[in-house]
Image (cartoon, rainbow over all chains, first blue to last red; front, top):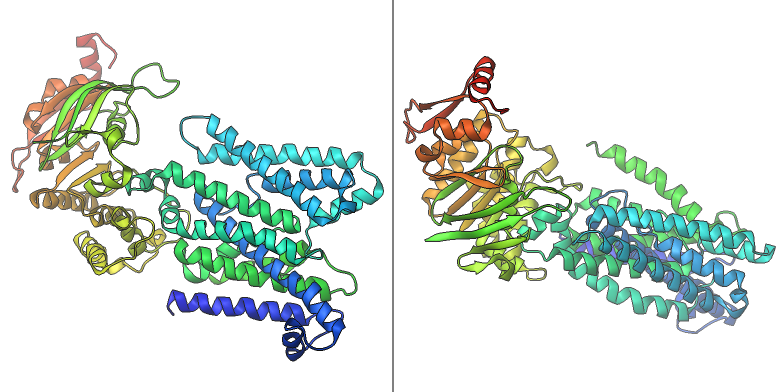
Length: 328
Length: 278
């Protein structure tokens, strides 16, 4: 099958997943009802459920899933490490410090956007710190040092979170923990707009860098000999993927597994060419997270499961199956 | 005409106490095959990296076709010089064809679509290196010799006039090593400039037009194989007793100087005679 056709089918899969995400819930809805509700027709309660709750929630999950998967694929190529994922450079730690600080200081009352903004600020701080540390060692950006800097900065921020939680009251403590587990429950069109404003240009940049990323994943020296301006590409790609992660974490908290596993699934099914890998990861990541969120809502209703539990419980067995299916 | 020219080229790695390359002045001719030889740590790969612009000299100057290496963009350089670096480890699966097609990057850049000329160049490179039948295979399933031929094919797909190789036959058996050197000879006859770093003195003597022998960052000898591979020079640089015998033939290289290292007690005798630690 041609790659373009494959991407089209994957895009249809996203649409299908969003539809499933809107259908499922405390009040199951039919496809007809959903289409009417999106257009503003029909029962006002249904319209409200669809337009204000389930539709934005599914769209946010899709955006976050796509962003995390693309970011993970980029980090895996740049660090030449199959274990790399969007949070490997400490972005999630920074975001969590920002969010937890905001929650403890009482920003939760001021609304979700304040916490999101604080999380984004923390994530960007972590990213700048890590890049500065790595850039200060040696003349070029050494991938191994970058990885170490990320781990160290992440550990430091985790300590900061524990410190902040130690002095938090019970209510803030609960909110902070819930934020860190990640959730799409607060999805709003405003939040989607903010994330899309960051994610769409970032994804375009990463897809445009696909060919240099192919070469970098073989080796930096090789890439340079083939004509890649390695330092520039690395800096742009690290910065873009980190910002993408920061924006995602700010919107929905830390959601694991998507950014690690989805790129591997795409590679195992269709090969490692980043010109296909990145867009396909975006679409598959979006599908996966929308469905995982739907499952999180209905599996133990009325209790909502943390989305990270679902991504791991569904993703791990699937990934193990995929590994066993393909020897070597 | 010279391809590369170096003048007082010096480089020291951070933290090192001696220069890895120490004031080298030399020329590498175009349209010929030149081999850089020398013991481990004599500065061969460092010199190659300076000539390819991935290291910048501390002092002195290296230029390619009259232009300092620092003035070349990576893309322009990649259109002129195809490089086979020392072993690289791809972490993610990739087919031989994908690997070789990467050689088209300097012509395509990040965005341009592959055209027919690009596909033809890749096909030709695959065939030239005898890996055409393996095109669809994942690189990770290839033997060492096949993988090395695929990497040479990638450099050929760059369609550059010059080819630089860093120990292209390390860890290959005799027949695969010979196949690579025969391939290089064919490319040289087709008019390409070939520059290679190798530990194999005898194959260098048979296949290269010119040899550069390095010793602790300095040029110990340069010239034709017969000029460079003399008993005194090789013993002095490598610190091991050798005999030089002519290649018995048959073949184009009959008579080429071949280095035969002698047994250990000769080494002991040599050290006593010269009174130095080799």
